[in-house]
Length: 253
Ligand SMILES: Nc1ncnc2c1ncn2[C@@H]1O[C@H](COP(=O)(O)OP(=O)(O)O)[C@@H](O)[C@H]1O
Ligand SMILES: [Mg+2]
Image (cartoon, rainbow, N blue to C red; front, side, top):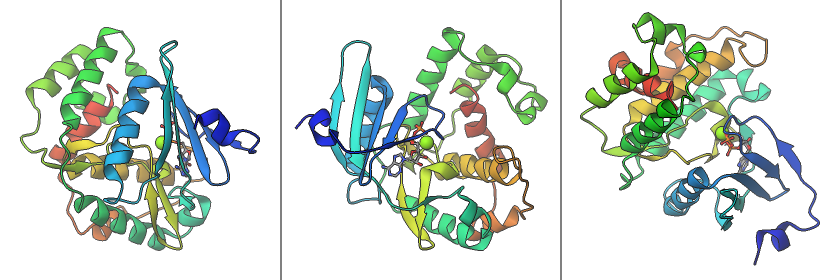
């Protein structure tokens, strides 16, 4: 059945939190994501591969148009609150417990074939060559590490690829991409960058998302948070060198 006939007449709301530029329509029990074919094709394939391995939406239909290279995924809706919701931000203990559970779930997924770091480097190269990287958006940390030029950062990243990369990684593990219900992980979404990498990729992006959300960057309401709580929740100690690689790579994506 076509996506059009599956959603016809059902009321929806738009969700605008994502930064990918995709249009997201929320139906009572389904979600329609419309965006660039290259990204959504990867996302749809990953969602299908993850079925039964991780709580993720089930793909109900995938359609693409040759022109203007747009696609749509119709998937089931996961019921829960985003990890950056007001309710969870007001209850950091519950939030951290859920994040601990999220990393436990991720750790147990088998390693996929898709080399996520290679794909990220290829995407980064395309963006650098197309002049799409905006250096003014780079973090002060990146600049303080001596990186001021996208081409030089790209060659550094290509030369310094981590030797590891044999485990599953979500790839965009920011708080809006983790849904929580009754204090537990209800599901993961936005898996277009998932693949074989290592957990430091997810830990780095998740820690940065916690910092950004608690600093008030998005809400305008700063909330103090002990950064150690996250590391206690995931039972690990941060390895800054490993994490920096993925944060630097993310500057080009
Ligand atoms: N299957 C889904 N179930 C529940 N909520 C979803 C689902 N897909 C998307 N959303 C909501 O829409 C938001 C944006 O979707 P997402 O796929 O993350 O887009 P983007 O790639 O632009 O970040 C998510 O943060 C979430 O709130
Ligand atoms: Mg998202």
